[in-house]
Length: 101
Image (tube, rainbow, N blue to C red; front, side, top):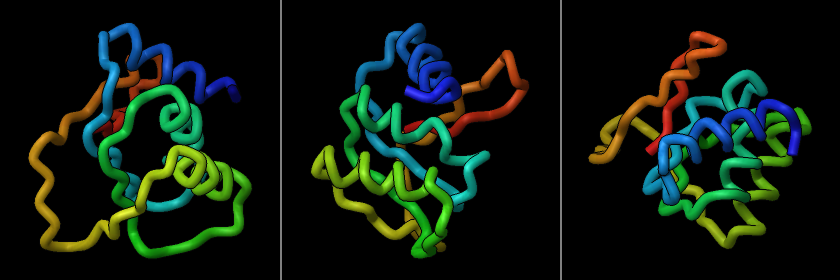
């Protein structure tokens, strides 16, 4: 598991979270999705939402592979979609907000 992936997974596990009901990505840039393959592999995921865009970076490919290997379906994130269980986890070490659902 790449370093950022293990940090994110450990951060979530320390909070007692075992299932992510809704996982949302805003766009496929590595600074937004780099840890998600590890998260997808290590947690039960309810639904995945992401915009209908593609990218050629390896990080994006790794995320798509993790989604496929878990048998998950990607739902299109777009205006008008209502998600009920949305919350942010604060990455204290890097002072960034991380969105998990």
